[in-house]
Image (cartoon, helix red, strand yellow):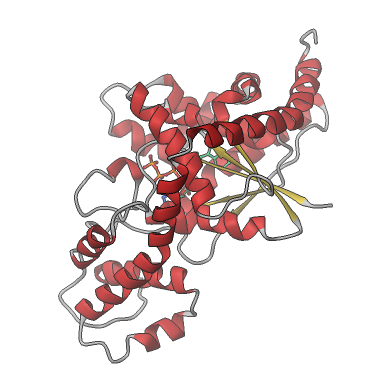
Length: 333
Ligand code: ATP
Ligand code: LTN
């Protein structure tokens, strides 16, 4: 039996190299694994958990779908869909709300971080992990490939599945989080102690955005915060966090071992050489994606066709599970 894989990404702001290395690029590898059956979702309902400009959200949603294809996801091989087009996800989230103790959600570190930054915290932001659990559970998911920051949410989905199964009988598969070994947590270029994040992508020098022009990519990498030394090696020491982050990006994109990476820089004359080399590999990886993306965005009709095809397939998988859950919970179906 093939393992079913489910993952998603929000169309909030533009995608950065952390999202690419930690998530999307790994999805392309999974697509080529004959043991996996993959579902990838643009989670637009999740984006609504913080205030969005409606027109911009619509545009970014299209852009993200086009980006899925530009990086190499093939709508014939992987199921690509838009979360809001399949009502099972939101409806399922309500049902799961009614088996999820509030205390579990209060423990979510992402909620604590994100809510601290908001003047008004929306209820949707608090409930965000339950919607994510519905995305995962109603598709009978075995594996959830995500970055380190989402591990706690996948564990919550596991707990919800176990609780439901305990109360109502064996129903949901208890999913496993799958975290990459390299690049699971790319840090901000401006502050290598904080995760590179979409919500901070507008801050100058913070992120490498996937669709940035080569000259902008080079500029932001050359400006990246490092330390006052000259030692180029992987290190967990806090003052080496900047260098460590640049090396991690380089390692993830070149797929070299840590030793090979350090050897590449054994004769470097300083951080300038390191930054130039990182900029080069990032540009080599992203330039073709950017070009394909621009082409795809010209044909909205084709993107709409792909979205509609995904909607149909996603409904076919999740609707029977929704009916099953409703019946078990005592609703008339
Ligand atoms: P936000 O700042 O709005 O929370 P984000 O940058 O964390 O956005 P998400 O849409 O929440 O982006 O995450 C999409 C995927 O990218 C997830 O699998 C997440 O784990 C992964 N990811 C996000 N940031 C990083 C990062 N800095 N390094 C590696 N993976 C990341
Ligand atoms: N919350 C996730 C995005 C997401 C997701 C999912 C990931 C929504 N639903 C289901 C994996 C499986 C995030 O990356 N911010």
